[in-house]
Length: 241
Image (tube, rainbow, N blue to C red; front, top):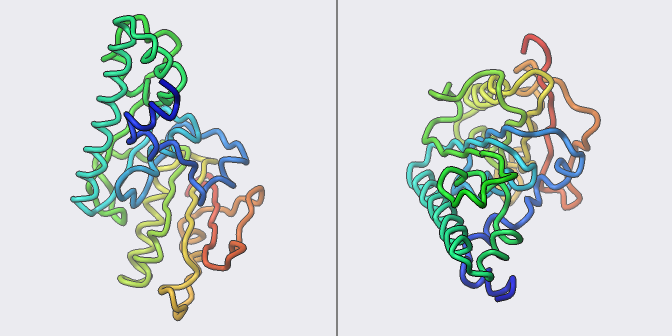
């Protein structure tokens, strides 16, 4: 069966096989990112897409919306189960599933099920991990260590906090992002430039990143997107932040 046949049978993989358009420019800079913290992860599909884009070994997604976290966890379970099914059927000698395992299952997904696949399919596969946590991103989260991740990322999240809850809670969220990344690693946010589709209150989050002790990364483009609705914030953690 063709790649299209695989996509038809295992449609769920198409959700993580799509590039992350709001972060493609950062991926193109080829930063060394192995551990990812996705703040405000929603349904988790972008968390998984980031793992695939960076070939990361570990990721966590954090969101305070319990139904979204449940959806993310459920989706992850389906992804892992599908990968196991493909590997087991390939192990029984099914040539079609063997081809799918080799060409259609993302490497990071193989790593998520490394201990659950036939021994003959483990060679060259690196162990990976991903989990989703229900928590308020503006507070310390149990089990999320400091000075650990290579990238703390959020997409269209901080502006919601600013517009709904004000400066103090935004500062707390950005400070948590700064806390979890290792020294010289990245904190990146992609946020709308206003609180609503009709404009109104302008959103500029620069002050919150600077107050968290972060330093702007000049190697990355930062500014208004061509369509004028999004702004990129790209910072690195400095010693003592």
